[in-house]
Amino acid sequence: MKQNLTEKEQAVEVVHPDSGLTASQEKCAILLASGIRVTDAAQQVGASRASVYRWLDNDAFACYYNLMKKEVQGYVEGALLELHQKALAGITASLDSPREDLRLKASMWVVEKVSQMPIGETSVRKLLQNKVKMEVSDGYLTIGGTGLGIYKEQEYKKKLQEAGLEE
Image 1 (cartoon, rainbow, N blue to C red):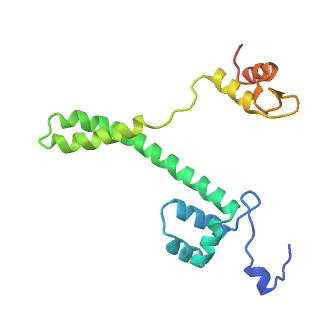
Image 2: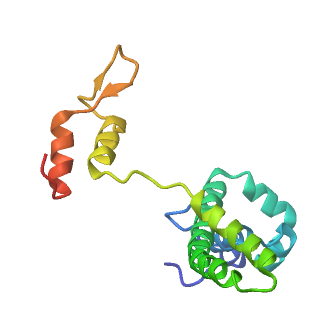
Image 3: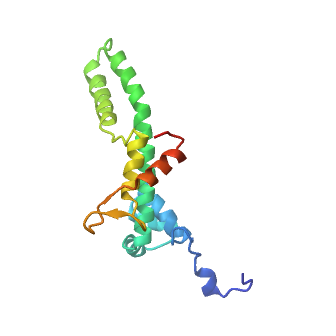
């Protein structure tokens, strides 16, 4: 690395090789994903609002921003799961409460939200079959050249074995 950088070189931020973003851009994406307004996020990272709006149009920034939103969503879902336990306790407690209607309504809302959360595949075998079906590689069997294929039986058996499962 150069020891004697010019002022212009010092002003240029290093781009992170995994995200393709500068530290300021990454921080801005995190702030925006956590609900901070564009104006406030721009101020906190020392950028203009116009720069932040340009960043939002950048594919690398958009992907990182979406990743941060996904992390925030995971945190919120985890918090909702914790609230689910309190909601169940609230429903139980509301049976003896003088304001049962309010507590019951709030508790039922939380229970409803948790019950609507999507749950992925629960069968390892089905999950592996679907993964093998979706993998596109040399030797992938296709139907009429459409790319819609039949999963490779050997690949499926290999994945089962890797997962420690028998056929």
